[in-house]
Length: 452
Image 1 (cartoon, rainbow, N blue to C red):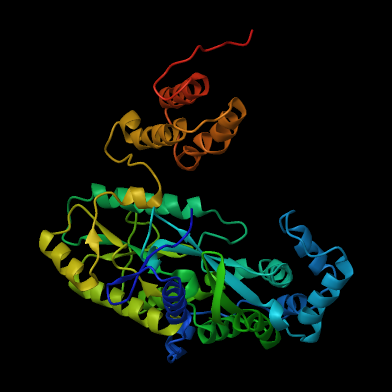
Image 2 (image 1 turned 90 degrees about the vertical axis):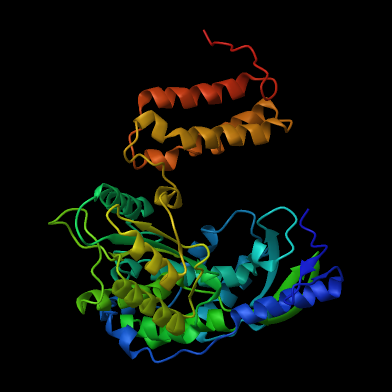
């Protein structure tokens, strides 16, 4: 199903030759993973505080002992390190404690998974990295230690992947600001929310940038060297149609630490009065940015000057970190009082399209200014669409049960974590699921049996 029979070339042509397909894919990832060199980071580093204390570094640098076994237990049950665990433990401890090298075990196969049916452009494939179990044990042992202190050095604007934080927290804050924007019909100043999408975010992290950020945060150089050894000695090969192509160096990531660079630039700009941010009330806290892992929303005044400052920050971040904004997938939401002239100026400066439905980018229904039952209709449509897609397949009653529990019942869960759904609407969703359970085929009703 995932066979790549033809591929689009850089010049716009296409090829069906297997060797040329493999070479095109390899060159694409070589270009993607190649460093563009780190520029002067002195200004950006001013916005990053030293939060890793000496006591925390003592814990981080302590000799690894049971960490390897804990990392192994935390991995999937289908991973196979070998019949004898002692050899695995000794090898991993040698890398973690004795500066031993990975050798050939730090090689990765990249398998291309299509995002759409019959893709011919490499941008429409999702690369999946297949690495060795030994490598995963080592990096998981390091990650288990780092996650104990990561919360102290990551800005509160980042709500994902940090222990004790929920991504829904930032979603609710963003929703409140958007609600304020839509209700703002008066005032000379308009406001904007710029939802940015980073292009290949996890693949465009400069190692030098990551090193300087970690050192600035207070991580000891010994730990930084260990992490860089794990990511900078990796090699990859593209797997095309079951055949392993030639390899090159791969640039993985520690993405939360990288995104701290954008937070630092936004904080500095806010302190210097270059950007204003937005509020949900007159006495509320000013919010300049919210981060959702590789996505982020920036808030500010909808003016030509403010937009110019915002674009300058994004360019600075791109040059320092390697992160590149995908403006084609980004969008802007304006407050209701923003003049059309300002909207056109801002769109021309950023090259980002405007939208009146920012809620869909947050994965939430539009409940602003609409009757409650109408506002949640998109959840109902998602449910019916999934049922229609699976009704054409032959599912046993057991298969239906798994599909209902793992897919259908999970669809409204995200929205329910933020909003109280009307009981009548919940009953409507339950009725759709029950009909699917008893139906013989899509559109063919079945007998609803009742347990007595």
